[in-house]
Image (cartoon, rainbow, N blue to C red; front, side, top):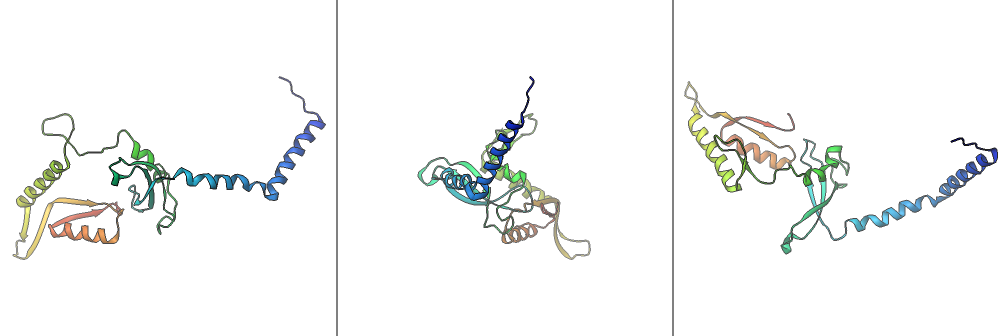
Length: 199
């Protein structure tokens, strides 16, 4: 296709572009911004706002979860929107790409929603209750601690060590929660204690 642009056609196009730019410079360009600002609150109307902490890394950014459905009325709540918390001192409302994709993570079909257990000799995982999962963890820890706890060293000094278990803590918590976790883990005698923030 052979298209020729005359001088007159060029000047018409350039004049239209200059006129549009001039209108924007005179303040008419803010109309779209004002229109978008007027629509935004309606997206989150009738939603429940919940503040939380992003679970991805050790930065512990603040997030706001918006959900529809009131749990107090027996309705199932569905998260409809996640954004950074502008009042949070860590991230001031910004999120990294992983944090911005949290809604996809929440809605992922492959996300685990229940405890899963692969029994001895089995080749697949099966869903178990939280009570069964926590009881199994507690029993395994108790048996291991009873079998391997060191109350005194060879010199007779009290050491209260449990060297065959370790604990990895999450970092997306408050200082108070981290302190309480540290105290609980150390009170069992576990020495191999680390935190996601350092890893």
